[in-house]
Image 1 (cartoon, rainbow, N blue to C red):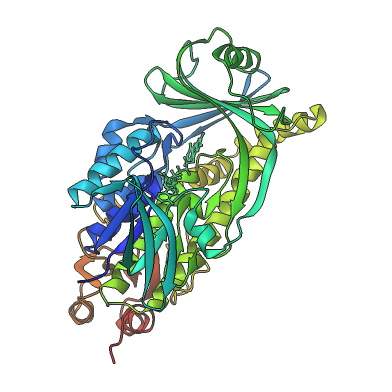
Image 2 (cartoon, rainbow, N blue to C red; image 1 turned 45 degrees about the horizontal axis):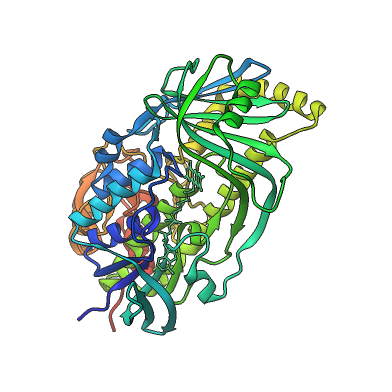
Length: 495
Ligand SMILES: Cc1cc2nc3c(=O)[nH]c(=O)nc-3n(C[C@H](O)[C@H](O)[C@H](O)COP(=O)(O)OP(=O)(O)OC[C@H]3O[C@@H](n4cnc5c(N)ncnc54)[C@H](O)[C@@H]3O)c2cc1C
């Protein structure tokens, strides 16, 4: 029997990983030491790029119909609007941030993975593991105290910030804990001055306040409290949250029926390499950062999607092991960028010096008045600008042909060119029909989707990866370049 891939952790990232592997018919087991899913709202946003990738996984619609479409952000200081940033113009079938509590995201992912025939094994903990050249033996501890040794083909640590897998590999989690305390409150609220489809950030002398709509009438409030007051930040009372909102935010808000009150300190940490032989770390096991920008869970889910199609091709013996080297090269670079961007956003928001605050507000107003700045901001927040410009998987390009360049995302056109959908991880050709392209499709039918798609430019052929990023570009007549790319980087040449 084929050894399964063992996914440790059934948070949003482990569930995404297991679902993608199962969709591509890779035998998979997923375990979690917790008795049940989180009931906490934690990450409350799914960004456009994650939704596009969920569409391709066949479950995007269930999230969209359960969430709230938030389509703009307002930034205020001293009671005045510095800028209004709309998500509406982005080139995506999902031009919004989807407000949805993490508890719902996990529920929908677990339903999705269940439809693919995989059950989450709960109250099963990874105790230890030993990696070999051809697999990983993992010792699992069950709720009754018994242990089981599983021979798995690959071990995937999606086991969160305190990852057993990361510790087992001895990977260092480099970074810092920031010296500021934060509070978080999910509350019901009346009197919000913006439409329920818009979020707001208030830069105030005493700190920052963020208000994000989660569902109709329910909001996430986040505020920084400055220098830590003790070893562990104290959980806020509703009255304390009300006082902070009254001081920093709009007047006349009525906060009631809190759902979750919490306090936290920001950790900014990351491992350098997300892979050690047959073991991977994915999601919070590999990187944690400020919740500013709300990118943590989305980044982790996209790590999983990046790894899954590569692992599926390797498990099905279509591609060589070297394909897996690109996972860490691509996703560790994205993790570093996300960490930096979230850190910058946090540093700007928590400025305390009045002179620095005045400069920030002035520059903020100027920058937010510039359309290109707003566009760049939105593309970064919604994650549609994520790409892999330095990936070892990028093939040749052609000077003068339009984008997307190798490593860049091919935008889904009205959701009709979803690449990587279905039960096989296939590359897609975006090219005009010709005898040469027909021959290419036929020759490489194990890794190429038989549907030809409309190219961004008639003079070129775009080869697009199963996760929607351009692999290489050739002139319209030059199928040999595509063929060489597939042969060199993707196709396993059996001996
Ligand atoms: C207050 C707060 C607000 C946040 N807001 C946002 C936001 O707005 N947007 C965003 O994108 N992100 C946000 N995040 C971050 C987001 O919650 C995390 O990035 C996300 O949960 C990471 O998912 P994960 O699956 O990697 O890890 P986790 O959700 O931590 O899941 C790990 C799972 O592994 C299991 N596990 C651990 N060890 C073992 C073991 N040895 N054996 C078996 N199982 C094990 C755990 O029980 C757990 O279920 C927020 C986080 C917090 C705390």
